[in-house]
Image 1 (cartoon, rainbow, N blue to C red):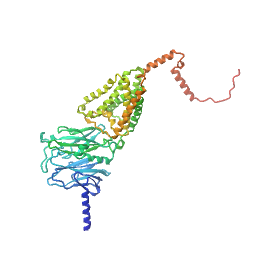
Image 2: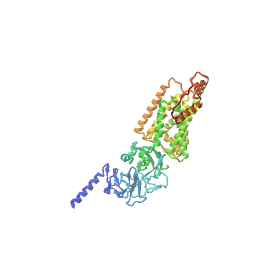
Image 3: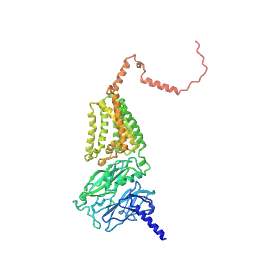
Image 4: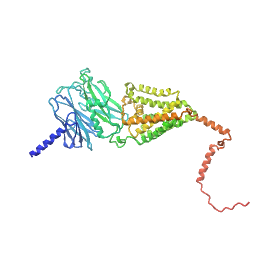
Length: 570
């Protein structure tokens, strides 16, 4: 019996030494998980088998701890007590608790569990802070916890919004916390600043392993500053809420660093992540975002655009149809989306029909009236729209001055109008440039319907701003990774190749084809007056149609029965 007891103690001692490693893998069946400060631990939680997390040997200069646990999309509950209480527990995919330490306290415990039917893979870590560090969520008045270090995240098709509770100044063990809303001077929490960071996961990678690996780069202050991009800095007077453009299917991690500029100290909130989509949805989940209707629409659009890229100016009427389709289809989609609640697939079909009508109308206007100025104005505006969209796709679009819708749309429209004005003296070059640039971009949009690429947001951000009144306040940052560089290179190669080919082919040819209606009228007059022209003897259209109908009727008439016939004797 004594030998068995010594063996158990040896096993427990070995587990305690392993827990001090950089990354430790735990099993939920053990019932007790031992952690070390600043060390990540992987663990699996199973329904009806709660776990107790314990941290020993806390230094006396540590004032408070933040224990946090993360999973991909299944919820995990973290609590101070075995019995769950609203103000002492949190449930979600990225959740944490602040433990304010008492004098002489050197051990801390938390309780972990999940209500999900499937086992949940998690990574957890406890972090320590001193009395000089600000306390994330220390002045919480909005959420359930007394001190809430969590970032709350909401998303829709247009925007992703993060919210967090204001922080408080740090204080020593056993002392009362500073009051949150008594004065706004230098000695109050209003001096604190909040740096909001954004971190993009690798594109087209939805694996749990990749997320948990990269989340470890967004937990501690030094790691966040080294790996993520600072988007905005908020002061104590600003609202603790920031909006970003949603990127369905693209993993994004957000975190907030609260800093005390007087003491030169800082602390990190609990990071939050999103894919702007649901892993559990039956239709349209993260693994199958692209709708069939979207793929069909943009594939056909890309085939036409590819033809326009290399042969658009030569086939002038096809180019006009392409431009008219874009021009009317874009405005119709905005109008029908804002005014009606019909489903996306129906909107896309109606947009395709309306765009085709717009293309046919522009071709008809050219055929009948031959107004080159009107046609080139439409072509120039489409190119100007794309160039203006690219301009605001850059960091320029995130400037504070363009948060005002009036300023944005005036500046955007100015660039759109500027393009046809600049090329007013070289209309053929404008036509060829539009064919090459816009036609090749349609290929990019088609690629995005099958494989995520940030380049589709060049025009999507403008569409979202036209559809959503609140989109003006969002930051439109997107990742630019290997896939994007490849697709950008393909776009550039297609555009340059198409433009070069068309310029060389059109050298020595008339700038534009003649007026079709005048040619038709001259040809008709020539046929009427020239009896030697074989076309002069062609019957009128009505007689030709009647003749065709008669031939078709003969196909359905029964043959007369064959019998003896006596020749007529003369």
